Every structure is written in C-alpha cells, then in structure tokens.
Amino acid sequence: MSVLQDIIAGVREDTARREAKVSLDELKERAGRQPSAINALDRFRTNSFSLIAEVKRRSPSKGQLASIPAPAALASAYEAGGATAVSVLTEERRFSGSLADLAQVRAAVDIPVLRKDFIVTPYQIWEARAYGADMVLLIVAALDQVVLTSLIERVHSLGMTALVEAHTRVEALRAVSAGAQLIGVNARNLKTLTVDRATFADVSEVIPSSVVKIAESGVRDARDVRDYVQHGANGVLVGEALVRHGDPQRAVQEMVSICTHPSSSRRFD
Image 1: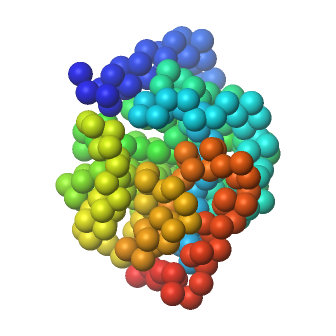
Image 2 (image 1 turned 180 degrees about the vertical axis):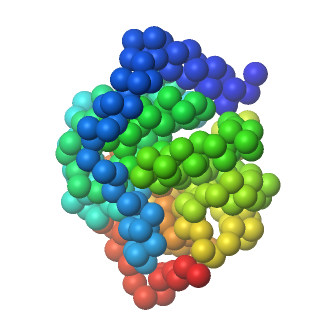
C-alpha cells in the first residue's frame, strides 16, 4: 500500500466515524447557516501574485513541524503579512489537523480559507462548507476521473473554489478536463516523498494560461518563491517554511514583496 492509499484508508475511517455522529442532512443545514463563501478565484485572478499560507503541525515526510496551540493567531499573522488565503490541514492521523482548527481560523481572518485534506466523498465537501471553508483541495491522484469531475462540480455548486492538485502532466490534463480553474502543481513525489522543484515548470507547460497555477512544496524562502514565479507560477502554497519561522508575519511579507512587482504580473486569457 502506498503512502497516499494508506492515508486515504484512514481518512475514510475517520469520515465514516464523523458521519455516524453528524448526518449529511445536518451538515447541509449547518452549511446553509454559513455566510456565503468568499470568491477566492477572483482574488487569485486579480492579484499579480498570490500566497496561500498554511497552518500545518506535522507531515509524513518531516514529522512534527510545530505545535501551533493557537491556529487562529497564526492565521491572523499570515493575513497581516499579506497572504491571499490561509490553508488549514484538517487530516488527523498524519498531519494532526482538525475541523476545529478550520473553524477557529475562519473566525479569525477575512481572507479565503482552504480546507486541505484528502477529500474523497461529497460528505467532506459539505463539512468544509459547514465549517466555513471557501476553498477545498482535491488531489487528482486520489480520485478517478468521474469522481474528480463530480467533486469539482459539487465544490463549485456550493460557491467554493476547488484547488485541484496535480503531480504529473497527465494529472494536470485530467484536472483541466474535469473543469479545474485553479490547479496546484505539487513538487513532492507521493511515492518517495522527495521534492523536485523542476516538477512545476515541467507540469505547468500543459496547463492553459486561463487557469491559475499554484506551486506547491519545496519553498524554503523568498528566493524559491521568486523562482517559481519566474517559471510561470501565479502563486505558491507554503507551509513548513512559515510554521518553522520565528516570525511568520515577516516571512509572508518577504515572500509577497519579492514577487509583487511588474515583472511578476500574470495575465489570464
């Protein structure tokens, strides 16, 4: 069993446990009481550069990264630093995240919030909306094409934006075919967990210019952000480098400022 398959098996068990306690109908009712989702895609299209800053305690590749006792405070620092959106890990077993983290962050910031998890069922999408998410991560490698297309449509029908993650050219083409308008290219190999920053430039070549492209994984500092932008990224998603930084607000400011100049501007056809 691959790392991805193992994680998804655990996610399905945890989701089933939550669904036994909270029915889909109850989730839909909760979602209906939420304010409308922020149109994250419009913000990404408007910005010359976008940064998604992540609340991330641990990962399968690096283990414990940071304790993060107050995710809302960290998210607020990200927002003050100029982040376009905040990503919140909600997977429990490998990343020590939770839906409670998502709710706390949503209450603390005025920018879009992404639920980052291994989404494989519509129930999880309704959960995301019920807890205030504006965006949902969908991983191409975790879904067959019919399910991927269906989940993207469900995300969009609830007013949220799907960030569709690809690791290869084939996956990127599948994302485009399924209707993705925001594609994240992850430089981390799901089998070996190693990072190859050249992956973004290779994979992004097959993504139409009308689609917003986000570089994921491998960002150590502002220079890596600049390199991704020079290779065509419209934005980046950063987790580890921010949660390990002693001053996350300043770290975000440095990453944003190095790319918010005319030469970094991107046009969407």
